[in-house]
Image (cartoon, rainbow, N blue to C red; front, side, top):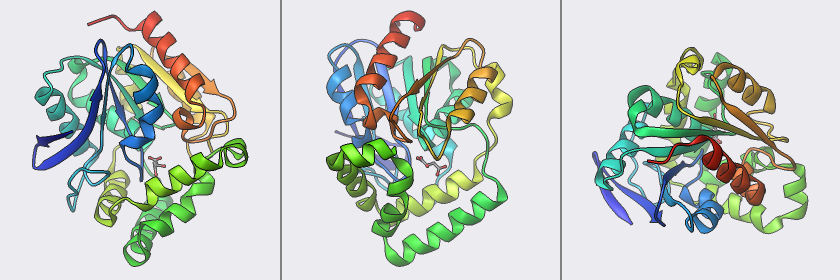
Length: 265
Ligand code: MLT
């Protein structure tokens, strides 16, 4: 489905009825990251999965910030006449969830922070992003896909789920260069969200793959220590894409969180 959102056309999936859950993908991915959630959870919830601007079927723009992505989600919810949602964001999707919480806390009845971190980039990370942008401009998205694949997945996934490995590589390789470059720049500019963690009062679940090499379990534990009343789930045999690598365990954790912590809207 497509909606006119701010200055772009946004592609999204919207399936099921009941409590709305919005799933925000990470970098450099698209909404198909959440296919197992769309398939398994839309029997019980309204599952909304956008492609962020510059990814999947959504129009790219030359520049983007985490605030802009959050504004796009907010406008999409208005378009869909959805008020409060559970917002789940993986990695860059988590950075966007922090921005959304900062700007639109009243639109949240739950927050799910998946394989993400609150701190801003270090100077070294910013320099790496600039170097990555230059490589992607020169060699295309497939070069980035080749480079990132090994870091994203647990060794167990790489060994036991060859189809999933291929799916993730193809997902990265097909993203538009302009969207990737804009996102790299946007992530490099993002603020440190640690000072706001103590102000999060909405029910919050933090999920991390035990083998996540990009945003390790220690980051997740620190977030749980800082967010009042939040709950941590560590998913065995999963890396940075825990929802995809161990979808049943992930979905179970989400269902349990919603049943026990999230007040219906
Ligand atoms: C992601 O999965 O969204 C990225 O690894 C986030 C990042 O590069 O900081």
